Length: 396
Image (tube, rainbow, N blue to C red; front, side, top):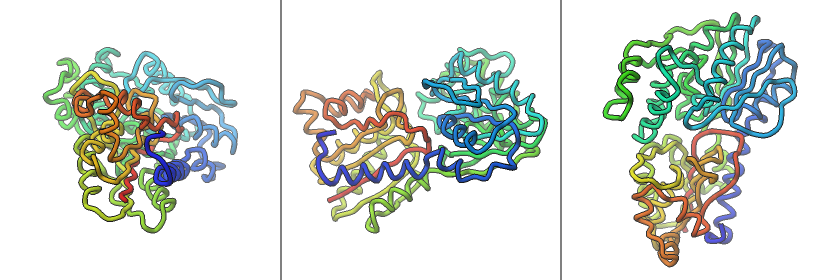
């Protein structure tokens, strides 16, 4: 990170830390009065561990199951299972079956602590589908740049767990407290809505797959496997989302910071050029944006959506006195160990001085090696939270 020096970088990094602190899952759950919550506990998602830990500090449960990404250690009072993300594997199927069995036992009702990533971490497939089918479909959707809302609609229609099916199995009331990683926080989309009725239809799920390399028999299942449309005995509340995160960044940056949007969507490289256009307008500004870009995979490179956006920005803002921090809130940008990157108007030129070709790297979806070589990667490790991506732009 030595390439972006001084007070500007430190200011943006402080704002990034403040943003993550505002959506720290354990803090959010500790604020909740759980004495009257249902007696069984399920925590599912990237933030499942800290959410469950906070709940177990407050009270005991008749049963507690936690499904989260792989991590070391044990959690007193709970059974912990690990799944795979972003593409489900056999551990995800084992976790899904365990959740279904757990739900059937939950007499008196279940408290569900839900966070993003649950769609891949746990799955129970409908009859006639295999893990290979699910993996091929997931990869096709991700590589096709399909928005996460549409990906979740497909997942709900292929699952015995999602789209409200989990809640239907519980012999008692279901209370859900969610940390949202979906723009607008629709309950059916967070972890593909295991405890929320599904407004999407088979036709919409099929439309998301149109033109992609999705197996034909998967399309047949999508055409015939409708999801529940009515809620049961459930309650649902979102504890925090990307707006909470962005507003915290604004407060840390001070009164001159301007929150532009919490709905930043679209192709990452195009959004990078858009932010460069803002930087080229001139004047001293600090902009805060949040959302979830997508990447259409064109090449065999290594990176993530925040890294691709940052590399695109560095090319389009070359020579401009501006700095961009682009980071995933969970600390894992794509299949890499980086949360994102901090770049400025000199990044592309410094890459060329090292013998690298920034434009070729962008075309190959290969941002990570270039950003690593220019000391631009932002590596935080997994944050334990998950509320979309954060973009902080300072123009001098």
